[in-house]
Length: 86
Image (cartoon, rainbow, N blue to C red; front, side, top):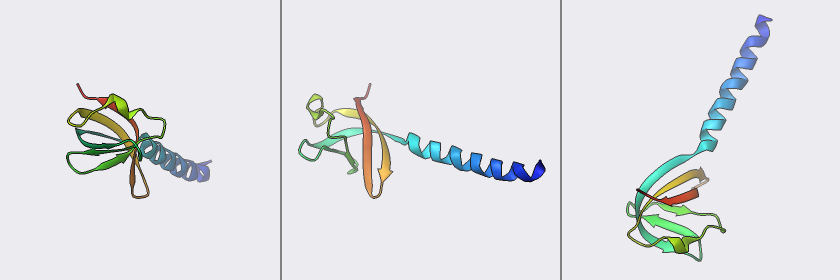
Protein backbone atom coordinates (compact mmCIF):
# COMPACT_ATOMS: atom_id res chain seq x y z
CA UNK A 1 0.00 0.00 0.00
CA UNK A 2 2.77 2.39 0.85
CA UNK A 3 4.41 2.01 -2.58
CA UNK A 4 1.31 3.48 -4.27
CA UNK A 5 1.14 6.55 -2.06
CA UNK A 6 4.04 8.53 -3.59
CA UNK A 7 2.91 8.24 -7.24
CA UNK A 8 -0.60 9.32 -6.25
CA UNK A 9 0.80 12.26 -4.29
CA UNK A 10 2.98 13.25 -7.26
CA UNK A 11 0.06 13.15 -9.71
CA UNK A 12 -2.10 15.18 -7.30
CA UNK A 13 0.62 17.84 -7.00
CA UNK A 14 0.90 18.13 -10.78
CA UNK A 15 -2.87 18.42 -11.10
CA UNK A 16 -3.04 21.24 -8.57
CA UNK A 17 -0.30 23.16 -10.37
CA UNK A 18 -2.10 22.82 -13.69
CA UNK A 19 -5.36 24.03 -12.20
CA UNK A 20 -3.64 27.11 -10.81
CA UNK A 21 -2.13 27.93 -14.19
CA UNK A 22 -5.47 27.51 -15.94
CA UNK A 23 -7.05 30.02 -13.57
CA UNK A 24 -4.87 32.77 -15.04
CA UNK A 25 -3.87 36.17 -13.78
CA UNK A 26 -5.59 39.48 -13.21
CA UNK A 27 -4.51 42.95 -14.23
CA UNK A 28 -5.92 46.40 -13.58
CA UNK A 29 -4.99 49.41 -15.64
CA UNK A 30 -6.05 52.31 -17.81
CA UNK A 31 -6.70 51.73 -21.50
CA UNK A 32 -4.11 53.45 -23.69
CA UNK A 33 -5.33 52.03 -27.03
CA UNK A 34 -8.06 49.80 -28.46
CA UNK A 35 -7.83 47.95 -31.78
CA UNK A 36 -11.16 46.46 -32.87
CA UNK A 37 -9.61 44.83 -35.97
CA UNK A 38 -7.16 42.71 -33.95
CA UNK A 39 -9.22 42.62 -30.70
CA UNK A 40 -6.30 44.05 -28.76
CA UNK A 41 -6.29 46.40 -25.80
CA UNK A 42 -3.12 48.18 -24.69
CA UNK A 43 -2.86 49.43 -21.13
CA UNK A 44 -0.89 52.50 -20.01
CA UNK A 45 2.00 50.26 -18.89
CA UNK A 46 2.38 49.11 -22.53
CA UNK A 47 1.11 45.56 -22.05
CA UNK A 48 -1.04 44.36 -24.95
CA UNK A 49 -3.86 41.89 -24.28
CA UNK A 50 -5.70 39.94 -26.99
CA UNK A 51 -9.42 39.44 -26.38
CA UNK A 52 -11.69 36.77 -27.92
CA UNK A 53 -13.06 37.62 -31.38
CA UNK A 54 -16.59 37.65 -29.90
CA UNK A 55 -15.72 40.30 -27.30
CA UNK A 56 -17.45 43.68 -27.81
CA UNK A 57 -14.80 46.40 -27.51
CA UNK A 58 -17.38 49.11 -28.30
CA UNK A 59 -18.38 49.18 -24.64
CA UNK A 60 -14.92 50.56 -23.66
CA UNK A 61 -12.98 53.73 -24.40
CA UNK A 62 -9.42 55.03 -24.13
CA UNK A 63 -8.73 56.40 -20.66
CA UNK A 64 -11.10 53.98 -18.93
CA UNK A 65 -9.80 51.91 -16.01
CA UNK A 66 -10.41 48.17 -16.48
CA UNK A 67 -9.84 44.77 -14.88
CA UNK A 68 -8.64 41.91 -17.09
CA UNK A 69 -8.41 38.18 -16.48
CA UNK A 70 -5.69 36.71 -18.68
CA UNK A 71 -3.29 33.84 -19.29
CA UNK A 72 -0.07 33.49 -21.28
CA UNK A 73 -0.32 31.62 -24.57
CA UNK A 74 3.18 31.51 -25.98
CA UNK A 75 4.18 35.17 -26.04
CA UNK A 76 0.59 36.48 -26.08
CA UNK A 77 -1.36 37.82 -23.13
CA UNK A 78 -4.77 36.27 -23.89
CA UNK A 79 -7.54 37.96 -21.93
CA UNK A 80 -10.72 36.05 -21.24
CA UNK A 81 -12.58 38.92 -19.57
CA UNK A 82 -12.37 42.70 -19.36
CA UNK A 83 -14.64 44.73 -17.10
CA UNK A 84 -14.81 48.35 -16.00
CA UNK A 85 -12.93 48.88 -12.75
CA UNK A 86 -14.84 50.32 -9.83
